[in-house]
Amino acid sequence: MTTRTSWADLAANSAAENVDVGSSSASNGTVGTTSAAGRPVYVPPHLRNRPPSADPPAPTYTGPASSNDRPGYGGSRWAAPRNDRNDYNNRSGYGSGGGGGVRLGGWGGRSGGWDRGRDREVNPFGNDDAEQTLSEQESTGINFDAYEDIPVETSGDNVPPPVNTFAEIDLGEALNLNIQRCKYVKPTPVQRHAIPISLAGRDLMACAQTGSGKTAAFCFPIISGIMRGQAPQRPLRGARTVYPLALILSPTRELSMQIHEEARKFSYQTGVKVVVAYGGAPINQQLRELERGVDILVATPGRLVDLLERARVSLHMIRYLALDEADRMLDMGFEPQIRKIVEQMDMPLPGVRQTMLFSATFPKEIQRLASDFLANYIFLAVGRVGSSTDLIVQRVEFVHESDKRSHLMDLLHAQRANGVHGKQALTLVFVETKKGADSLEHWLCMNGFPATTIHGDRTQQEREQALRSFKSGATPILVATDVAARGLDIPHVAHVVNFDLPNDIDDYVHRIGRTGRAGKTGLATAFFNDNNASLARSLVDLMQEANQEVPAWLTRHAARSFGGRNRRPGGGRFGGRDFRRESSFNRGGSDYYGGGNSAGSYATSGGYGGGYGAGISSAWD
Ligand SMILES: Nc1ncnc2c1ncn2[C@@H]1O[C@H](COP(=O)(O)OP(=O)(O)OP(=O)(O)O)[C@@H](O)[C@H]1O
Picture 1 (tube, rainbow, N blue to C red):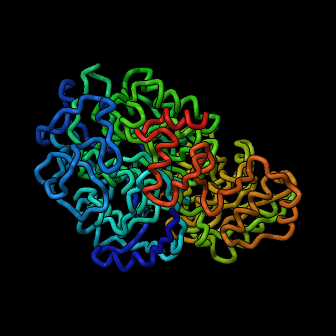
Picture 2 (cartoon, rainbow, N blue to C red):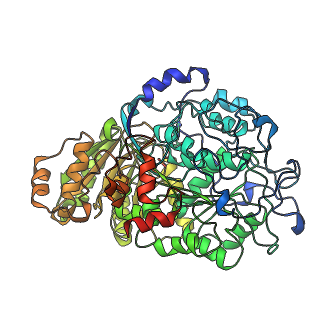
Picture 3 (tube, protein in one colour):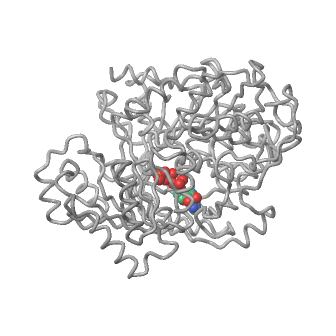
């Protein structure tokens, strides 16, 4: 099913909502797990990790459900099934089919902040008065029209319909208030589709443009699900083992920190506690934070494996698993660690937990791997790199290796002369190696352009300091390796320069996506030479899709090149398309993408109507 979506149309529907649209530039949360995140009040060990005392008594969650408990489409896995949409007020928890009206009652598990009798919850919005926050914050005015006509494609079995407004979805009052505090007036296209899918309890593989709000798309259903679910009874395995209910994995420390900051804002005063754990920072501090209680754990894979091996974290109670930048998490480097976490520890199986995979790119071979983690999932594709919107102007210039520095200098001088290089206009320069990053930074500084670097050889403290200095505009040029290519949401990045182009077109997509975010425009310049020949064809394809001007010399390069890994026929307007379309599922000849009903034949021929990963994999073996 392909639907056309107009954000402009949605503007009319959001009249009932009274705040202006804006990005979350209100962000001023603390970075990492500093003690400022909450002033601890002593809690005896036997009372730790217990649901807050104000919670109503609730039925016990007794660990992974039996196969009979696995819900099909239409109900959350973690709440009592709800047949009558009117009786939710009588229940302490309920499943949501998504798409209902605003409901204020029926939230069984939690209400209010997690600080009750324990830690004090620091206001991540930096302002204790919510009303004041709403009225006083300056609107940053996301350009919703920019997303008009964005192509959306969904496939899978019984896809829940999208929503037009947050008000249509029953996320819970406390979360709705935080959405307002973030100044999110209406859902972005990926949120319109992904949130109802997740609220319906479905597994999801979602591929949506950079900067289009994927973080909220997976955070909202998780927070909402934990809020409405039953208060868990964590096993008493060891006083020091903690049992998060949701796990969000991301490939880099900085991205984990950013997701943590966002999730803390979304979960403010909901009773849901978010903790982050990542490498390079003192583990003891993170352990202390975990001991104070955790519902949602945001982590990088390496640090999480460490915590699991020390038996300080158990995944036994995981109800929600989200992988951000999922294609990166499953590529060569990370896959063994991810498999260990997801398949070899004590995490509930696919179909028992709910799994959500998000990225702006989803190569088919990675989809194949990823589907091991999913059960009867829905594939969602929403646009690609500002594709139909031209949010990012892409320029490619032929620059010999030896001329790159002087060429960069020319660009920066021109920028300065044109006034683009003001305090708020930041330039992100991608290079291939850590050594190259240091040496370019040094050279820029020597030539009067304040720059800093972020790469894997710097200490975590240095990395964080560099990012802070760049974000604040104190050092308006950041020279980075691919460690900064994914996920980082830095307002005011006006220009991304690919000083060294990556070998993979998907990496290019993520890099240039550091600008032109949330409806804003940006510029991406790439230095191309003969060393980048293998990228030529996919670069031309991508630029054409995005209505960019392609230089004739690049088209000639593309005509000469053979494509290889980077040629992705059929990718079309999206960063990926459901690989099941071309797999053995199609052998029966049924077009299960035509609509919800045809999925029946898909399920039958594919043999996983029951919604289990094993069925999926056997179908292509
Ligand atoms: N509904 C909304 N209304 C306004 N702004 C939003 C909305 N949802 C998200 N945003 C803002 O859009 C920006 C980009 O969001 P986010 O970082 O989640 O993008 P992403 O899709 O994860 O990008 P990437 O692919 O680069 O990781 C953030 O500043 C976020 O606060």
